[in-house]
Image (cartoon, rainbow, N blue to C red):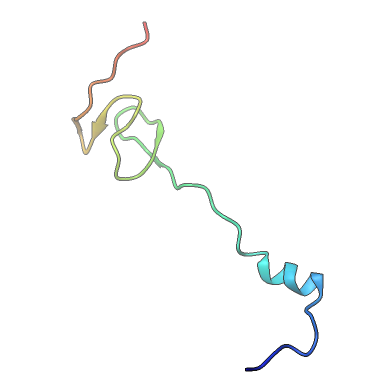
Amino acid sequence: MANPKRRHSKRRTAIRRSHDHLKGPAHSECPNCHEAKLPHRACPKCGYYKGREVVEVESKS
């Protein structure tokens, strides 16, 4: 089984790992209330999905 002859430098390791970071979740705009929401999910602000209300949302007033 092959073994590395020398250890990789910290710089080389860091450059390789520079693209391994996590990305945040994608957001889309709700067509009803124009708030940011996760795609393919009901809007948490108004409760609408694909133009119809699917979740009842209590108003805070």
